[in-house]
Image 1 (cartoon, one colour):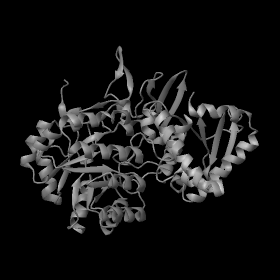
Image 2 (cartoon, each protein chain N blue to C red; image 1 turned 90 degrees about the vertical axis):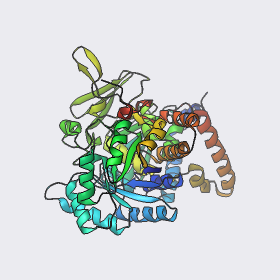
Image 3 (cartoon, chains in turn yellow, brown; image 1 turned 135 degrees about the vertical axis):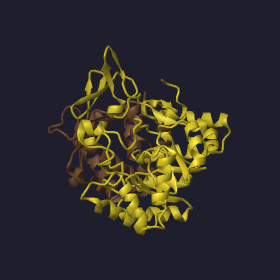
Image 4 (tube, chains in turn yellow, purple; image 1 turned 30 degrees about the vertical axis):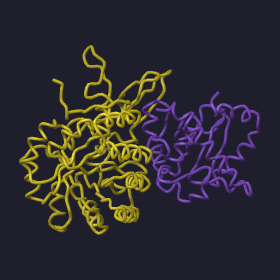
Length: 325
Length: 169
């Protein structure tokens, strides 16, 4: 089982490699990837050094070009693909079918992975991407149960990677327009969900109020664990009820289902968090690496220490273990 | 009493000029050790950042565009800053060294951020990409006592992180 780890900076990349990542995924410092945040990501020179560092230690480097190209500006994404290929990255993680077609045609030897942002969640969609663009791996959306994955796995002709730990999106990956609705900018087109330019925090007595654009997202009372300022994690009045209308501010942790995921046909486990600091990357990668070879009891003990690093300081197995409605 | 709180007494007595000179000397040393520290800030380099240790009566205002740091007593900041980061002193130092995760400290409400969030994120990412090690980086300022400073600094850091770090998250 491979462990695929995030890196938003060269320092985090080195931490991930040193902590035992089988592969590290990262992006360029522009809108070609879905973590286009200020001060984050890699210049071409930084990626060159990172690829060399990883290779010398037997670790692979994946580059996410997982936003959707703007008509007329395709050159930005084509150039990013060309540079990543020239730098010798082990795989490109792509969401846009147009970009997949371009890469498959111009760089047929380049390994291509289907990003979670492509939202390929059934046998027909995945096999189409394998046949049309020679995709070698699909990162499944976090909308499927483990039983769904087990049903899909024998019928598709590529490897399966799933998210097991970290931030959890509202369940319409690659198609979510909540951020765009509030700010005009989205992870799909601009690489930013709830762009920091539109986020404001203010104190109201002991409470912390988070706002996105013109919308109040949440009000955390004194001592209450906070979450990201995204609409999907907002607390709203719906009818007579005040609560989390879309989803709670919690993080994904499905490592407790490791054996079931392995049996279902998953070959790679992905950690979310390119926007997180190197301390997070180091701690999570080390812990999950250890958990992979631990027995279930030891695994649970190891994972419990990561709760404090999680959004809302709580974790969920999300749709993998769907028990609601 | 917390370790950092014990510093509040001498700091409240010392003249501001002394505090300012000391913080500038330490800041300049860090910049000398890490000349590209603010590179990742990009367009946010021109912004001003206030770092506010909860336990101390002072505020540090950093302006990356001119590599300057100002030290002011709380409530005596004459110009508004673009962004503020507030938390326990040793937590701020742990963030500076990249030993803690800022998002996790924000989730746990140990860290408060206000103002320009783009600038705050850019600063967080800029600092996180450098291997700042305060005892190692600042030890040369102690001249012949550098090895002693380094040893004491590392022990003090271990103690502070163990004693106070367990209260974060």
